[in-house]
Image (tube, rainbow, N blue to C red; front, top):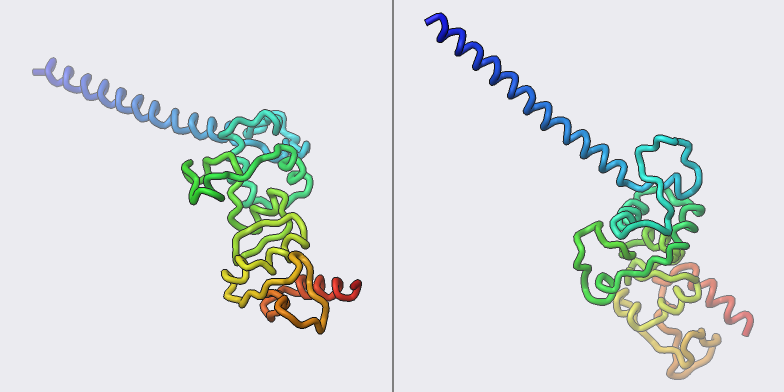
Length: 208
């Protein structure tokens, strides 16, 4: 009987020890996976040449040598960061194209945040991609004010903005004041125009 009790106690101790080891093994990989995930994340400070940590927990990699997954991570996190002209210049040097599936074919086939091409969804993303002008009505990006104004005078923009469209006689130019005829002033004559459009149109007329 005494031997049976000792045997049972020994089995319980071995069982408790095995359970403790199992718990330790389960916790260790989680920590390791977390460290590995951090190591796989790209260091943006390194891109700008200002990371001071030799043992940085983020990945130090040349922008030109990014893998598709690393580039997708960069594009995913850029809009969450404060805009930096220096970092934007580094990103511009990568010559990342826009995603054709997203912009031309109705949707990207890759999981959200996993595409390594630009998805221009708002003004913040567009700015990081090198487009300083953004039309909220049409969700479209432009590199110059002239492009933006030409777009705002287009039929497509006027239809989406709910503004009557009146085509110009000469595409891309504003008609002179007082001229009558079929031309009209396009949707730009409405109050919905931005101040930029109005001032640009005024300068055009003044110069003849």
